[in-house]
Image (cartoon, rainbow, N blue to C red):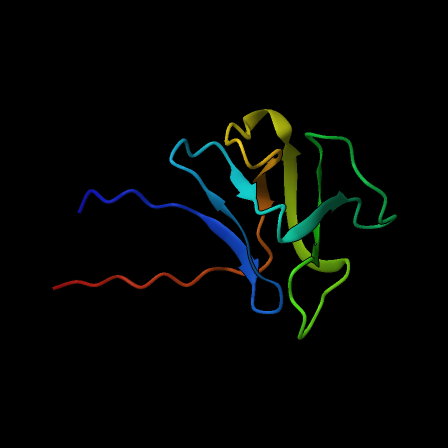
Length: 108
């Protein structure tokens, strides 16, 4: 079929928090909607940039169910140098997604 596939991140509770751009060098966080942290799973302290940690999101725009420091349980790596899109200062790469994604294939 030849279609390019792009990644996005999110959860049912927190909505989509980021997307992959055409460069496909990481998933860009939507920083106008979320405050994202990459934390050590045991101490809940920030890990250095480039190190693997748990993705923790605070939703900045949802009035009906605001989430503060919501533990997504996905392990990610923040990388500010791969975020070459003007409106985003941080990209992340997945180390491990906690919930598997189900993919459907249409065969005709």
